[in-house]
Length: 182
Image (cartoon, rainbow, N blue to C red; front, side, top):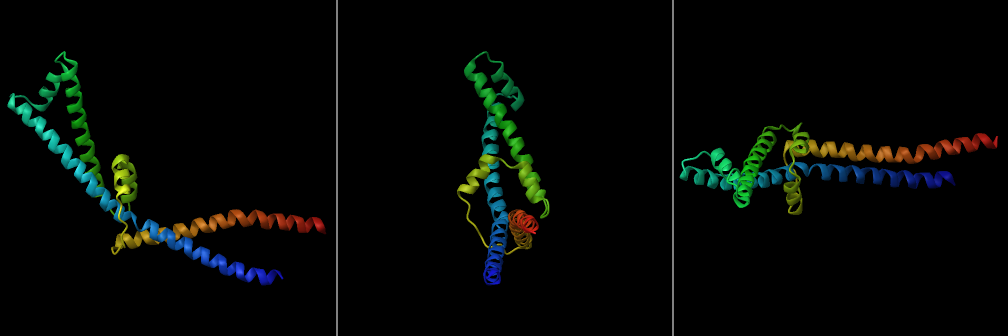
């Protein structure tokens, strides 16, 4: 009786094993696609922030001032309205610097450390916007293949760990019960 049940369970286990592995491969192979779309959004945010900052540079030049002097004039004006504008401009300068640094780091990342650099440099609001508009794709690059293989191994490994976590205690319980019967 036990053998009759064991064979179909092995068959189902093999199917689940493969399905989970394929899901892992497909899911992780989307990282290069997501990364590319994220970089497009990041570049767009950077371009727009630079454009806004360029307008403040031009305004400062119109008064024969550097941008730093222009910001300081706003901050030291004594008017809460102008002080808030100085804070906004200063925040924009910092935003451009942060976006430039993240863009350069991600652009320079290689296939092996890209995911780590991405996690270190990610702007979560841009990532959320990317995710909202994410279009999955079929990876046809070496990078896509590497991530697919990593996903396959991760999916298989996670399934194997879960299976072990479930069945090892059951097997140990059966062995103890068998010893107690003797």
